[in-house]
Amino acid sequence: MKIIHYVPPLVALLIAAAWLTSLRVSNRALEQNNISLETKIAASRNSLVFQNERARAGAKSVKAKREEKPSENEIKPSADWVSTSRDWNKLVLFNNNEGARFNLTSACRRLENLASEMSGDELASAFTEMAALPVEAEFRNYLESVMLDQLKKKNPEFAFSAYLAKCQNEATSPIKMGDFHEWLARDPAAATTWYERQVAADVFDKTLDGKTPTMIPFESAFIMSLLTSDPAAAAQRMNTIPPDLRGSLGAYMWSVPKENSMAFVDLLRKSMPMEEYMAILRDNSLTEYNFRFNSDNNPKDIQKNLNRLGFSPEERSTLMAQHFAQLAKYRAMRDKGNTPSREKFDDQRTRIQAIDPSSADRATGVALQSYLENAKTTGAQEFVEKIATDYHDAGAGDELLVPLIEGSANASISYPKDRARVLATKISDEGLREELLQKLN
Image (cartoon, rainbow, N blue to C red):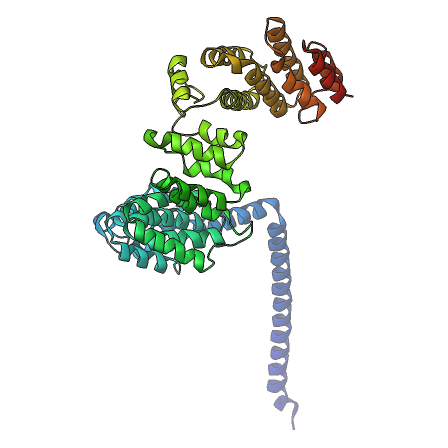
């Protein structure tokens, strides 16, 4: 073959080789550019500015998600539906996402009104069905209280059975059953039958001498209903209540008709120590207006009331001491961190002297002891000691000093024995003085 025949293929081969070489160079240049660009991007991402921008973008995304609520995309019930609906469950679920303001909504007002409109059977059914609804605890407790208040009138058997169950399973106070006496007065046969059935079924947890606090509101209702019609039966029921629980009767025996007052006082006298029954009478309708913290009743009117109730001198002294001690306890709490004020003690002592002069010294001493017991400060020690000394020097009897001295001796109050000995030396009765000094040794 002649040389000329090789020329075209050779030229083509050279051209192809040159093109391939150029293509490789271009690829390398492109790779270098890509590497350079990636390096710059990585550096940019690591920069503080980029991180801040990304954080802001993320925060906006999270905030948007938090603010977005499924309910915003739903069709909300009309105000007319909320104000007129009789669908208890739907109203409850509609109002359930209101959080802490659940009781400030129109839906909650409608639920309250609806509870008053529903029959006893309707309410009982709704109460039972609501147990399966996913309702917030605070909202549920509120609604149950609203429903049970209505059920006490419309279906008391269901209501009091529900309260008993709550007392057994939850930390519910028996005070919620304090109006059992209204059902007993309205329908004594039904109320008595229901209660006796609970007792027979051992519904009451027998953890304290066969009785528990959950029985107190029921027993107190029966006792009060028998005060004048059958006082012996009332006393018998009272005696079945363990002594440790009789003091708690006061909360359920607050309202006593004046015509039953003597029978009531007599029953208490026969059932418990003086300190306990006078504590009940101090917070009772019979004496409530006499011994409020801010009472300004005429002392003469109070004297007449105490005479009408037939209180003995010992009972009056106990009553006055308890009343003054309660006020002193309140003052001790108010005075913490502040300079104690003697004015309130002077005013109350003067008032008690006007009501029952023979009780004033002991009542003042017990009040000073109560103040010191609740204040527990060195300043309080000096404060009560100054008052006690001033009153005694001004002619008060030894009874005023005794509570402070005995409180120091038995360590029931924070009062040093050396200071108590100084007070003991002021006791005018020689025999009492020596007895108290012996207790301080």
